[in-house]
Image 1: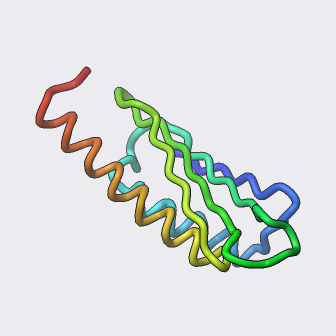
Image 2: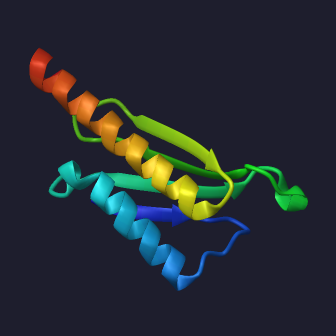
Length: 105
């Protein structure tokens, strides 16, 4: 499993980068042995205007499953990352349970 971060013009610090890798890695823990790439994108939707506009989107294609994309917005990047990681964990669990119940595709 490889996690790639795309932060555009935001330029995350080393501490933020490590936080993202830890949170997303834990959320995608079921895929730790799989050969897949997880793309994490951070953006500021409204720019300098402020508001609930910090966005974190995560795209992952687990082997043998359809592509999962989760996207969350919050007032700060840490909250957006936490929300997106939680949503990813739940989406992966649902997708893997569905595959287990219905057999591989």
